[in-house]
Length: 220
Image (cartoon, rainbow, N blue to C red; front, side, top):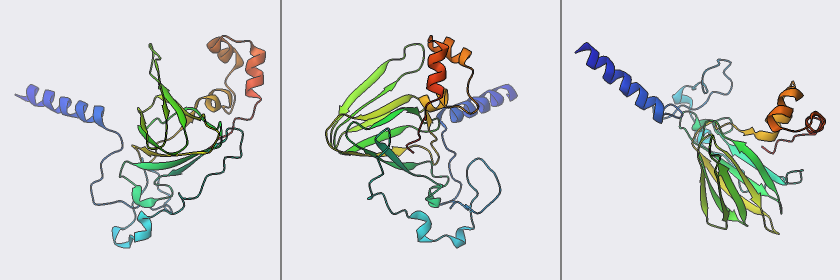
C-alpha cells in the first residue's frame, strides 16, 4: 500500500513539473514590492492592503519604439518589473517595432512561449526545432495574422516591407528572459575561447576574433 502511495505521489509530482511554467499564485494577486532587498525566485509581494489601481496599470505602448539602431527594431517589454501587478500571474507583453528591413535577431525566451500578432506591416517570422532535426518553420505574416513560438526555441522576426511594422507579443511568463544568440556567443563577457568557437562553427580563429570585436547591440 505504501509503495502505491509513493508511486502515485511521484507520478503527480512528475506531471506537475512537466506542465509547470511560472508557479501559480496562492492569492488573488501579489503586487511586486520593487523596493524589497529580499531575493526570491520572482518578486516579493507587498501588503495587499496597500495595493493601488496603478499597480495593475501601464501606459505607453501607444508610443513607437526607437528603431534608429543597427538592427532597425525595438522591443518594449511589459513585465512584472514595470507592471508590478503581473507578479506571479505568469504572463507578460511586448510591443515590437520594426523599421523597413528591421530585424529582431535569432533569440530564445528560456521561460516563455510567445504568441505574436501583427498590427501593421509585413513580417517574415520563424523558429527552429531542437536537435537533431533543427527543422525551420517560417511564415510571412500580414496585419491581423498570428504566429506562436514554442518556449525555449530559437526564433526571429524580420520586416520584409518598405514601411514600418508593428506587432504585439504575449509571453507565458512574468519574466520570460531573452538570449540573443549572436550576442551570447560572440559578445560573452569574458569572451568564450576562440579555440572553442572556431571548432564549434568550423571557421578560422581570425574570423572568430573579428566577430568578438564587433558591437553586439541589445534591442530590448
